[in-house]
Length: 466
Ligand code: FRU
Image: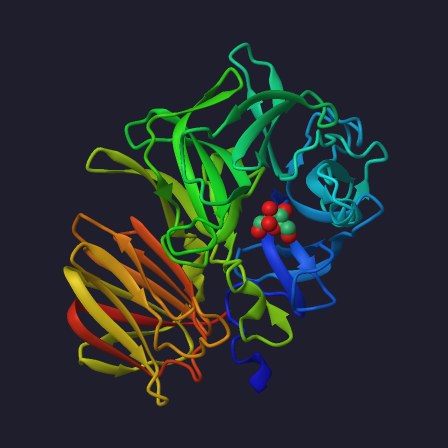
């Protein structure tokens, strides 16, 4: 493997070349998971945005496809979603061949440069060949801007009203608020309500929302609203918060005013969920962009920049009477396991640079990954804090905020940990994902040894390979 590719992960999605950020338009159709993404093929920094495209049948092996959407005279193609318009409400397909509809933000760069405020609007495109090719709707934009600078990232879903009627709901990020719009046909949109004043974190602009219908462990129906925020995350820069509550009569009402974070690591942003999953599976599948706007454009990869997180399955859990959103590694990841090693010594050689480690912990624990360069990555729980210390874990001079210890509060007992390492990232899940932390790392050479310093038992390592 060439030196330039040292940081290329084995089992996370990365583009062959160029820059990516947010996952977009994720939809499942005919056995295929489609992943579109913010993409600038001509450089490894952000630029004129396209929707890149990749397809997988197992959430692990991704095949990159031709670009899905190109910028046009209305602007760059910013983030958005895709739905299956099974009843052809849009009229853009037929009842024999219903269309997929992508709903995205147009960002008019010229408008922004000339000092206008109405440079973001929502457009749609349709596909009549199950997502392979897309045609932009001639009547774009479908939701013009009314002079609000930040007006973007439409996530559309269908809802069924109490009287049985269906309509499309668009969840849109508008400055540091959410606006909900409704449409019968994905072309005509009417504002329903606004959410976010006096609740949630407001240290930055709100982006990439998602509105999910989920079931609490006691069987009650809940609505969960994901909202990415940048800056203003718990580890500086970008992060994803969420609200648990109810969505009825066009309004989202949170159950409480608690601020909740989906992931306490620094590098999981703009994540949203797949649409059109078979209802029999009853799954909420999520993927995020594994980076942070603080330093995303200067991390030391060469021909490509940024990966997606592992695909994760979201569910609601109850921790001592508080509902939280759990994000578990998708079960398909178990298919990556190749060799299994049981570790009893305090120091153990690691089999590869792509591996998974599972252990039981005695609440407080410390383990360390190290290499022959003296670099180390330290994971621990102490004094009610789960931490990832990447201060000595490799390259960090590219940005002053990169070398840091990131912690998540965990006031209850830790019993198990699950760790995924893949060349330049770590994802840590404590107690079946009650706490999740995602972090990038750029060690000068792969981790060679794991040292069990404190509080670990039944440690197992799996080498992972596609
Ligand atoms: C989030 C974001 C979105 C926007 C896109 C532009 O990371 O800023 O709000 O649509 O990236 O690439």
